[in-house]
Length: 229
Image 1 (spheres, rainbow, N blue to C red):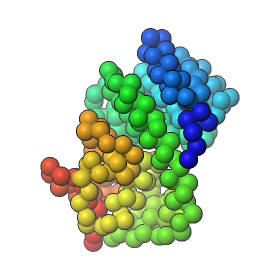
Image 2 (cartoon, one colour; image 1 turned 60 degrees about the vertical axis):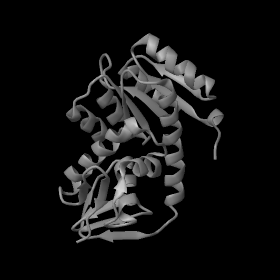
Image 3 (cartoon, rainbow, N blue to C red; image 1 turned 90 degrees about the horizontal axis):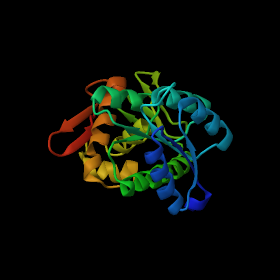
């Protein structure tokens, strides 16, 4: 596994105090960190630095974080951890929909932020290993091409984000089995934080919007399962 010293993080945050604190903590962890204070600066730094992961504030002057994320993913897909002061579910879903892999609501702990950055990088490595697998999984009307990372519903391709694909793939490996939220956090995101269970819930809602409301079953108080039809 590559070491943190070989990894570059782009921090996009207009609050200088927060940006400095995040930068200092990540540098202490051994990362090469670049900082941008607005959307235009972020896109320029992204093109020049080619970071391995982006920590991106949702609210930015000029281009907001959603548009910045959308343009980054269109240019070159990259793991994005979005920071937001907004707690509305709609805002979170929109962020996930434009390609953010995870989000944290301010105020947040630096320890958790570092853990999530490490987890995003581990997921990229796991995804590259998974790409050599030519397995095609079929569950009901859903077909998952593991090697191509493509998903089809009734023969029509559905565009999923990296995290949505990884979550669906994990559920599809054991159709009908109920996965606890904590296990999905560990298996898909690579960490176990009780406070992050809303991340799982938000991504499941995003999957339902794209694949159909009946594809993923909720087992209240436990977790989720992919429906076998």
